[in-house]
Length: 276
Image 1: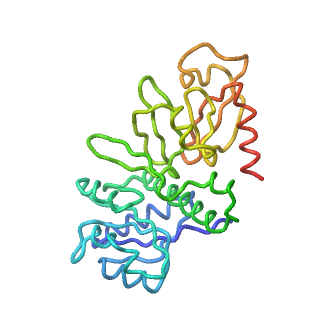
Image 2: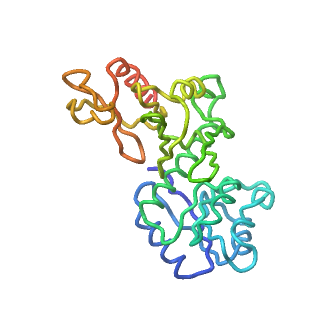
Image 3: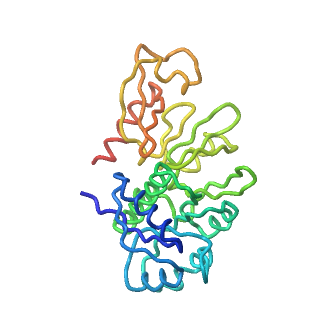
């Protein structure tokens, strides 16, 4: 049984903390546990100096230091303590750019939907698993190729915002007309570029499953045969490639992507490697 995500909730409104706790308690995957609550940044900092947690669900506007000030320089204020991942939870969307400049994992606006919170916590669980694997691995060339570098980002513009998406958060890239869709556990973003360029840049961390899709190896949950009409839209709406077709299911979002006949063997090999 996996260890639950340890969560600290920081919000000056008791009802907001109560609702967040209820949402967390209702999430079954990933498993989560609220360890404590704090009403101010100073209370949160004091608690973190004595305890550890994996994720802080952090409000922005609070008495005293606000959430942005609290997140800024958190590592310096907690020397020798593993720095938790920050997920901002606020009623004000205007602080999102600053939050991502502070390398927040996600930014949720109130009222928070359970599905949105679950997606953010799934990203947190994945990030922590990759961090643990990088620390525990023997450090060979193969491990470095399979584990995303901590400073490896995809930069794109979305509705006037400049975003830096960690490669470790990306589930897949999919070509659609003149653009690419970048899919994470919590959102789909449109970007410029070509799959061939991304494939060369990202190397063995991603697998080309079809002419229009590049999937993170760790994100492939299963390979399954389907009727050819099931995934015609994903294939671009053309004629089916064979009497039957293959598809992969993607973790966290439970979406299916087509697999071309020539890539079925490579996907099987990738799955075998993940299970080994």
